[in-house]
Length: 379
Ligand code: PMV
Image (cartoon, rainbow, N blue to C red):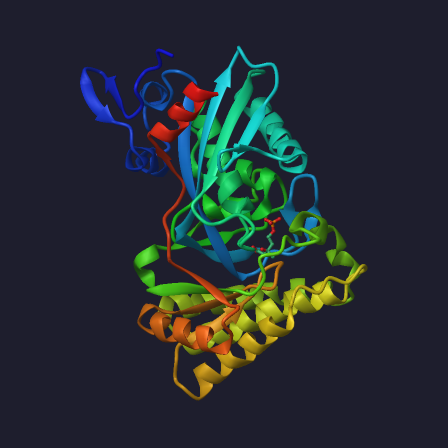
């Protein structure tokens, strides 16, 4: 295949390296010359992007509009530098159907259907009817119970848009990523990110609230179970309104959001810990009181949650917990306390595996990985 080598393209006689940094500059400057973006973006309808997973401090649970994934409340998260998805998208007139490979193997039907739906939304926006070959790789083990939909749909959105030779600004990339998975909206901008609930497709997007160097937080994830969750978050969002507690959670979310923003701005760990734990507990209270009830906590999750509080109150470790739609416990702590937190988690049970991450950047375009081209040559 005689494709243009990714990474270097000549733009108005200058050699420009096509890196994530170039693209984040484009995203920061919506007024950039679009002809230049087109030249940098996609000489042969193929592009790769990388996006990080994120962990929410103020949770998104329940939608006002399920189809558009307009959330019931605004949320706030930090990107996870060390957990990411790399996705390559190739639009081609030679394809008759979209295809999807995850970690080098053809994806199952459920994942494929969801990605096709997202590609349909992107096709509408990009005004194309080409089909796409999508190749996606996570740097964290599948089935480790670490959610990959946020990083996956953020990377897919950026790669698909770039491969089409289009440059959307950060806000619109975030709204488009949201259509694939709500939390993916938060994996587009870098650092500590707020997703404003909004009340329309255009007004529901995420943006950086604070840069990643604002606070040296680390997420020490205690992997309690590697089993795939029976009820995923898309189905869970639909049950949220059946809980009598959901209106109270949603009504008070704004107050907690304000508190977490103040805590991050002032690096006030006590306020941060109280609010983050309360918000996680409230979301799980809604889950447990929905119809059908969703119980994601396991005995070991509870034991860890209790220990984390004890380490904070009695051992003066700056650590708190938060859990998504699964039993794994995200222990958010100061970087200096991360080794002690990891050691204490290991001491609770040999069954606990640990994955750690610092605060991460936003979604970026990267050169097409050599492994992608090598895979194409053999297939
Ligand atoms: O983006 P989804 O549909 O996978 O929903 C994510 C929901 C939680 O992870 C439980 C909370 C959040 O805000 O990330």
